[in-house]
Length: 190
Image (tube, rainbow, N blue to C red):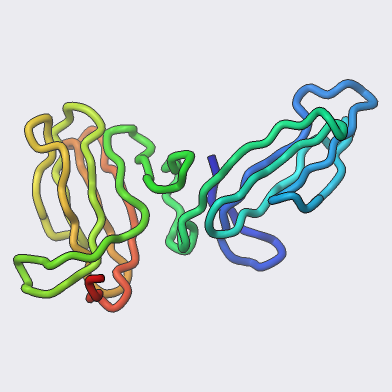
């Protein structure tokens, strides 16, 4: 699954995977391709290359010959790496969910748009899920929102304008942290 890392060519966080040869023979070689375009030839002496992914669907291929190749599909959600990286958090293979390092919760990556009954405005939102039977205290920008548990495993989190800090605390045992951009704080329903 893609990870967010600092791209040395652009100086900004971007989605990346490493591809190449695993435990290669001394004379092994392969071409690494992204969406059919050759990026680099890897050899036993330098068996891995960083592959920087674009928004949308990406196919990374490691071709040992014209007939022998392995391909891997990765989906990148627009803006997946523009927010601060939370150490240990990771994304689902399709890029739609971010899992906390603790494994106790996960959050949708791309915000939706809905009418917020509390404000009466259409606002961007994400869904936060309890990934088990944990009791999680949910806060947004330091303001308590709700609790998640086996009886209520999901919460809709409406986003304010700008950067939003979403936390899910399991008592004093762990605190899951996520960042989401709420844009202007409003959105237009389709």
